[in-house]
Image 1 (cartoon, each protein chain N blue to C red):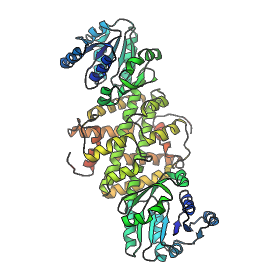
Image 2: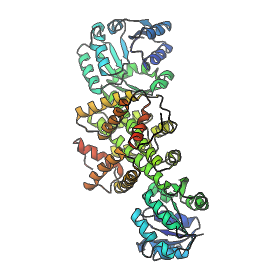
Image 3: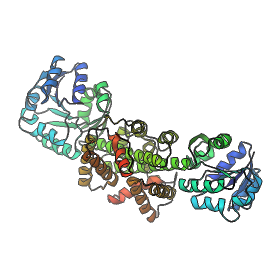
Image 4: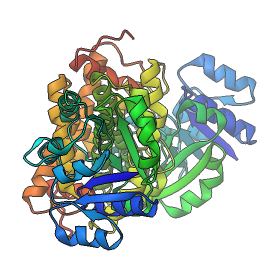
Length: 294
Length: 294
């Protein structure tokens, strides 16, 4: 099967390499010609526009930073829609607003083009290993048809519902992760200010109801002052921005998500946008006048 | 060894029974004479005041609702201090303010009385099974001396630091649990309002970075509308009240803990104080105008 792949960034590049490993024939496109040349050495064909990609394949994977980029690549000048034959399927694996996923899909269906939204979690390491988690929204027959394709980049591929549901699930994930990081920060900062060892507290509580993947993954980083990403604060801000846009549209106030967004914005303003999102603890250190260096 | 046990409530009763099972000789005291009579049938001796308990034993366990009750039992009229010989040790297993633990300990040391703060987590089921988690603050030699005694009610007994540290660890635990419940609520309510199955979202995200003990323990209860405690909202309000009193004293602002406290207060005002703390999701349902009954 011949696959188009648009967007060869930190995530898209290793994902496309895993497709090549799985013997798919690839037509790739990215603004960064260094990356497309790298993929070409592995056998991928380079296209110069989304339109050109669409002219050559029946299914296109997009892996782009956010909603506007996906809209531009699909509907813009020299976009997918200009080169697409009826029956083409776009699998958008970017993490974008589920509202935009739904709008795009409705627009595309008018032209006989299919769409799945299929954002991933797991970050660069799991993209490289091919062990991402994919959350899929869209028609069941499309999901079944492209399950194996998605599975060649992932450890799990789960259909959550109709179009947009993949991104809703992804936003739910990002809500919980963001707030849980804040929860761990509040606990550790209280221990520290009380003169109690955060590490001993961590060990005392991790096995009980306070236990979480975030606690085990991020508390050690916070205590060791290791803020190399991982997952960049800037990207979590993007996700929370999509969370709040969606929640406001749906009429569901999310006060803690909004509060954590403000904390992350404060850190970004302090120049920490490229840190791991666990650097959220620095917001609390600043509030509590704790000085610890970086 | 002869042990005094003061406070035979939901937690204290099964804890004291486990001590009897472990062949300790007990002198018990509680305002509720029905419970003391029940313990007497198992071989415990009944005392009529904390003072009387103190006259008979070298170590007293207290398991009381909150800081004022502990202060009253220890320092009040007919309190422990009136009957205590020098060298007596009080093991306060109540969940109270760590500031009060430290004050009490300092007061008692003047009279040659020792103290450990040793709050527990795990709730009634684990109190019955004898598998509580005990977080201990106080001198190492006292901790070592009474480790076996505490272990006869618990699966784990961990020393976190000096006096007050046990309650600091407990508050850290309660901060994370409260905020994590809110995180799960925000995620599930967004899914529901977006028309996506909260159950499918739960299944899609529980294995990743959003995974937590709270997610696995509480999301199913929220989805099944099962709000029988578990752990009562009223008690979590008590703990968060101790969190905020402590954090304000230490000069460490905890905005999310404070926000969740307000949510819980709103539910209490709606008459839901006796529900499980997972009923926090009802705060969000009310905000989002979701009607689902109880």
